[in-house]
Length: 169
Image (tube, helix red, strand yellow):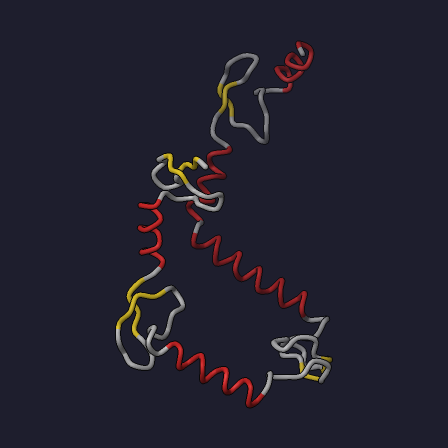
């Protein structure tokens, strides 16, 4: 299937999920992966953004986690009671990682979303404000040709020009 690379714009042969040509994909992969230091042995290795252990130590860590899980079982059994971290009331557990009661879950989700939206806005403020300023860029009236600042998706500079444009269409 013929595809166009998102990075360089070159046409290449690829699968449906491919978005980069092989050369750009390799560059992108190197950006995501990087030099990491193993927490156990201290050796450097090439790993992803969340990698903590080198390929030699990772199987041992996985084996130890599995041994601990099978010895102790899951954190909590479904149906037992737990205390909500937000309001302090008791609730029946419906998932092993559940922290909040059914009343607090929507509130906590909104708080988290608000926090991420706030962070995103402050990281990308210049780009977002630039987009707003771009929408209020001066336009020329389709009827008389005078430049004007639009308040919305206006095509004319005044109500008179708007009436004239409506009567012509």
